[in-house]
Amino acid sequence: MYLVFSLIMFFTGGTMAMIIRAELFKPGLQLVDPMFFNSMTTMHALVMIFGAVMPAFVGLANWMVPLQIGAPDMALPRMNNFSFWIMPFAFTLLLATLFVPGGAPAGGWTMYPPLVLQNGTSFPMLIFAVHMMGASSIMGAINVVVTIMNMRAPGMPLLKMPLFVWSWLITAYLLIAVMPVLAGSVTMLLTDHYFGTTFFQAAGGGDPVMFQHIFWFFGHPEVYIMILPAFGVVSEIIPTFSRKPLFGYDAMVYATASIAFLSFIVWAHHMFTVGMPLAGQMFFMLATMLIAVPTGVKVFNWTATMFRGSISFEPPMLFALSFLFLFTIGGFSGLMLAMVPADFQYHDTYFVVAHFHYVLVPGAVFGIMAAVYYWLPKWTGHMYSLKLAKWHFWLSTVFVNVLFFPQHFLGLAGMPRRIPDYSTQFADWNMVSSIGGFGFGLSQLLFAYLVWSCARGGAKASEKVWDTAAPHGLEWTLSSPPPYHSFEVAPDVK
Amino acid sequence: MAVQVNETDRKRAIRRTALWLSLLAFGFYAGFILLGVLNSRP
Image 1 (cartoon, rainbow over the protein chains, first blue to last red):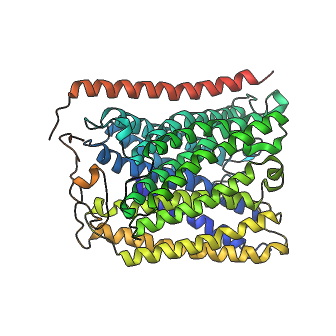
Image 2: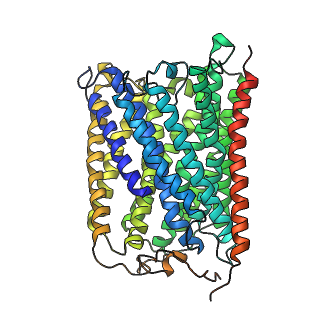
Image 3: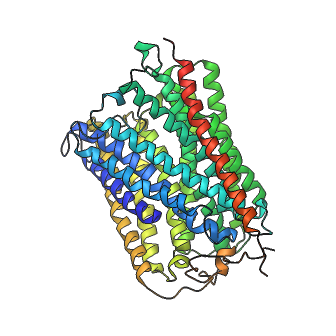
């Protein structure tokens, strides 16, 4: 259900992205008015982050964590149910803002005051929707931690868990720590607007920059909430199709934990230009650069796993490899942005847009696609068309680069983000980027078709699914599809 | 080989973990609002 909801939201947010890219296809205002354009950028981000990527990973956790730790199901099924069913209401409320007087929120997904307080009727709807999404994520995360800590099969200590489980355990702790911070910040926005408080209003003794600090204390770990489970997925897939055990399992666990810890102490790199003391700039710059160390460990270990492996290129492996290359590009542009003097030039330009889309699309979204292609036959009991899936991979990989790589050039040339019109000097690369956007969007219809057709029928999948490769872990010991309650009797893990 | 798990102990542990994590989440929520209160000057 989480995954189906996520797919619907992926196409909803994708439609918004198509509107953005259509408007930016050439200079001048052609399709939508600027206010609606701003609403589209805001809503696209909110829908993709909270509606598509996060629920997709929660869905993967719901399927795979019990299977991988030898548990019959998640520990708290009622809380799970509640956590899911909040989301359709939250997103109906959020999307309904498109039809209220004043239009949908248009001040950016970051909801910075005082701009956000100028929203019309949509403001309380936005705040309530964010609260509901937060509650849903917190409940989902509590369920994951409780399941992993209490439902593991006997004989499975923490340092024997599959890396997908490890990455989710760490992600769940991040969620429990930072989603309440987001909820707290939007609660303060609400009281500022309706109850006369002045948390973020300078006229009343408050501080608008304080909101930015609180928001990014949530916002930066949020990036890792979206990427760590993808790291876990890739750490499962690469050993399988390299036919080798993962290189440096312990180092991978400690690197994931280090990334999670560091994500709490780098938030102000998003706001270097607000005018912070030099010592603050230095601290946040160096702490941000430090994240490259554990991330480098992970990239090195994935590469070392493949080294001298007997590699085959099934769709999950192709997506994992694409993740490895393209996420690294996003990581490098992140390092460029971490440098204070450089950031002063790049800030709020398309370079930032290119950076975080490289992290989130070929990073998080390709991680989800790799996971779906890896485990879909296990879930449905049917094999999908490998040929069509490879077509989907190549179309996605080519178009994602056509879409986002030119945005680096646009940003370096000075094109600001969140604008519906631009100077003619930016016309060529915007047109290329838009063509990439339409191509990427259309290729995803192939993904939806593959998932749908695999759920309906197809060649029977075996227990191990990837018989010619080397899948490892408890999930492959069960039938495809697994029974409703996966491990009624706890397996004995050696 | 199958292994027996004590269901009563497990249920108690599940409840305890869920409660602690809920408190932790509430602590972050209330703590950051308190931070906002302490930061604003009338």
